[in-house]
Image (cartoon, rainbow over all chains, first blue to last red; front, side):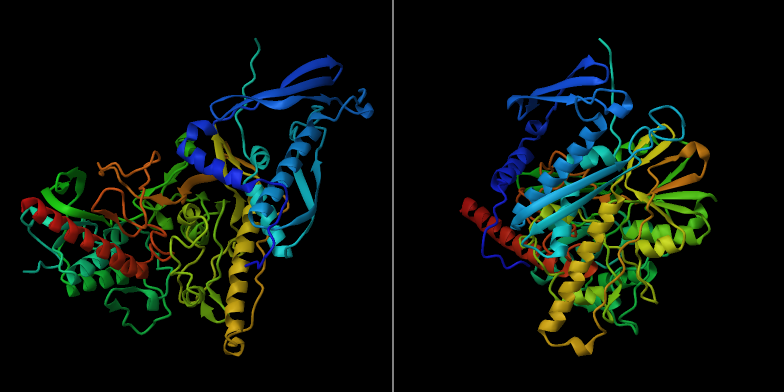
Length: 186
Length: 432
């Protein structure tokens, strides 16, 4: 085991997370969350999404402020490039989730991080979305994440932190496992 | 008068201090411990001694633990092959001998239908009458009911579905492809023998525990024993809930002491896919997390092997054993299968090796949580006088192993004995 005399500080409040885990074990209803986004079409493939409220701990909750996100497509798609593409938002989601997980797990294991960078790349054959070849899927065929981590820990310990981060990641689960999606029109 | 190990007539139904439910390793060990403490008791057994071993195991199964480790309180393996692994027949004989030797008061063919609390203890109702007792030890096993994922019901009826309790040998399954769900010792052993029978196997791999059979010339359980890992207490590990949920390590007991791992199965032609994540009409969907679960299995195994090396080095014993070794990481295809269309007919049979759970359907004492799991503190429940034995990591890492039954039984019987003594003195005070 590590012989740390210092207490790592990655800015993650592990006590609060552990406390929440204990509290929600006793009261599983509070663990039921709903995450929401509202997306408005602007023009062409340009859309603007707004996120403010969500539901959790038994009541409506709010972010500190309203966040907005532009999505569009690059000019080579004959669009205006007013924002990143939706598929890039997926990469943002996965990389952010895994990186936050690395910080949390490292904190829990008392490993001081100096820097963490995730480089993420997804392979996509756009013959799928263009309807050229029905054997090609629309989504990513594969996603690779490469971490560069500078920390007070051995290579094996860092790898174990990254593995645990994947195990506990919501977005990793969303991408690697099927989810039922219902789309309705009012 | 002692009762004989195997009864032919039902005993007199009535009052006894302790009822033990189940005559497996845990129940027999408890019986011997109660005997030593002078506590009168009966073992109610739905079938015969070692019933689950006789009826709910597949033909080729051998113990995962070497013979030298197959011990019960006051009873050890006496044969010529201490490093070998017992088959089920030999193990049943071992238990029968033990039951006879300790004159265990086993009442066979007696199925417990309900246990409920009374003013003075418990009422145990069976197919052969009702017993009243002050205390109950539930030693009915941890592997009563095979666990199936929620979506197992969605599997098309054209595919044969088997649990490890149904499975005896490959001959009982149709020719054609077989999907084995689960990467525990059970999943890998079944995958291995089904593949060898000429039925191509697809193995769904979630989180698992990888271990080599031998390391540096000794059985891995030898090292875990030396290092005190098997005696580690339930209060000493960081996350006991997780430790109790861990699947059995990927081990098999064979004369050649061979490894049982994913690389070995791949080499024999087994196709590895991710955890079975869903069934949608004819489509089986696999998780894309295979790389990570294998990485975790490799990392954890390596951590254990390095701690074996350290243990040897600290004692300066390096020269006495084979040199330290790096095992190959689990090799996976770059392109992994994420779905499988059952309509294509390549899979004829699914074997669910997703773990087991104890059956408490007969327990009418409020000691279960909302997921019907027993709430206990090292086998001691919140209901006075109601105890468990033989559950995974109940008091120690070895709790659900045969050789783990003895220490747990001693602890539980000590607790039980002082509870009985206390309640007796309470009664005499009340009477006075």
